[in-house]
Image (cartoon, rainbow, N blue to C red):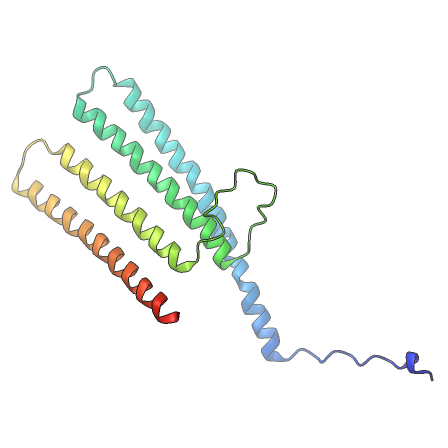
Length: 183
């Protein structure tokens, strides 16, 4: 038998550990339907946005200035929610499931594909703080008469908003400290 005719040695049989690792790695695809569901939920946010917009437009001439501002704040709130969903969908999918091939997409935003898990957490909390601030402002604007119940409700909305703000600041600081420590 010539040297070229020697049979190649077969690759080693996969071990149980290797098969388990492959199964765990493939399990990330179980998240894909979650992100698809979030993408479809943007349609629900759009429907609610259009309903709010239609309601605001129908009452534009008869509504008070305060009612118009409240309507616009509702639109801003829904827009922030839609933007938050986009951030979570794209960043989460790319961080946990698979990279998206964006070659050929001339409108591809620069931030997509560059947000790691730490930046995703900060963007998520920043969006929650913005949504909380809009909700708090809407509550202030809707306040007609200051009653003890209204004061209590506003107090708790402010407390919850401050918890979101402090949490996001502490998370940003901890990420910054961890980043300096890693270097």
